[in-house]
Amino acid sequence: MEHQADVVVVGSGLAGLVAAESLGSSCQVTIITKGRRQQSNSFLAQGGIAAAIGANDHWKLHYQDTLSAGGAHQRRRMVKKLVQNGPDITKWCQSKGIIFDIDSAGNVALGKEGAHQRRRILHAGGDATGAVMVSSFLKTVEDYVTWREDETAYELIVHEGECRGVRTVTPEGHYHTYFSKAVILAAGGAGQLYPVTSNGKQATGDGYSLAYLGGALLTDLEMVQFHPTVTRGDNGNTFLVSEAVRGEGARLITKEGIPIMESHPLKDLAPRDIVAREVTKWRNKGQKVFLDIQHIVDFSTRFPTIYKWCSDNQVSFSGGKILIETGAHFNMGGVVVNSRGQTTLPGLFAAGETAYTGIHGANRLASNSLLEACGFARWCAEEVKKMVEMKSDFPGEPAEERKNPSFTKRHLPSKEEIKQNMHDGAGVIRHELAMKRSLNWCKRHLQAIEDSFVPATSEEAEIRHMLVTSSLVLESALNREESLGAHYRNDSQNRERKKQWMCHNGMTKTLIKASKPPEGGF
Image (cartoon, rainbow, N blue to C red; front, side, top):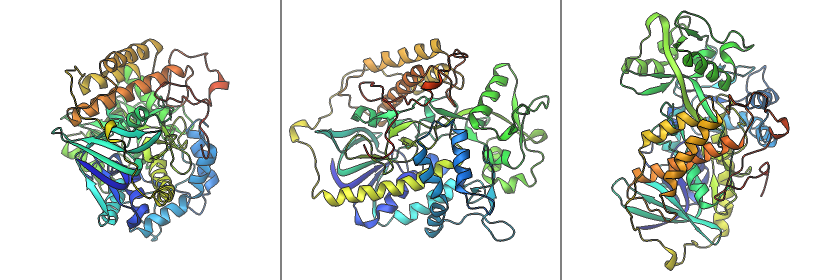
């Protein structure tokens, strides 16, 4: 079935919703999501949104903290633009009906998280900031957005070097084609490439795979952030225990009560990559690691979402301790965009975790992602509006080039096999031989899938996206021979070639290495 829209947004998380809200009723907007509209990593976000609004704070301090956490592996002009606009972005959110938590004096309450010099984290609903923000924007866009739920985008429509729409498939194998004047990829991250993750089940790396197969430039896919405090229920479900808990005084300890972060100047509020490696090292020695929360007053009311989930999933609070492990959390790399959200493929835009803005560098600073999603999605929408106004009709594609689904018998690995392969090759601590084995495994399966692949179901579409994105992460990880931020190799102790630290692992369909992506226009 064919459809038309001025703009197609792939993904229903915060970035996609903010883009749709900013486009407003001036454009025909269709949002495609492969689950229900509330299902996104944004909705699960417990942490808040960072902005330098405190009396003793300044955007320059926020800028310093962002660069420090990210190993100075950033596009500095983009970082400056975001943190300078941080206070205005939060005011804009308030103007759209979002109510941030207040303190006893009636002012916006500011929390502290890892690697921040100041208290600058705004929360909503205690530890339910993402849910509050997503729910609010879902209401603001409902009157002028066309929703297409339970459809998985499996291919961008690219003709004559321009993105002209997207193709989708449903779980039952029904197909839809969407022609549009612009496509915004806001499909989230790829945490589901790993066995343990804080991400929702929809985060299978679709946006990276779609852009790559469509010919857009991606970079720094090796920079995968693992969150150090993920807990697991008796039923096997996993859940993030927000960094805000450590901001309020919780500590990481062993079963014997040994604090594991005492050697770092910032202790338990060190950057996430450092804490995640320390947790992993203790666990690799056979030691269990716990989050000690016994000194947090009124934990159940201060962190109601965490408390309820732990209670519902039989997570023990025995002795005021929660058993934790590391889990895949956020991709710092992604589809290269400029300050207006444009990718290197005309007609294609990207926002949120799918996009590489250069904000996060080698390790994302806590609570910068919601700020990035709001800021850059708005700026992206401004550029998309201009494009829509310039195009008088829908580009479409020549009828003779439209594909009719045709299937060949194929063997695809299971999602569990892909996850285990990524855990073995591209986990918290990496080694060349393991990365090569995992990459070769991905390539063998990808070679069995023809370029004209049309998935029979959304499940098949997801598996292909997982294989493609896994291969990109592994290829990028092998290309970067030195350790940097979240990319840590235990086979590179003396191979830190500092002239290469600021190089970015650019990747296109032909695996072309690229220099540092452009700061502004292309």
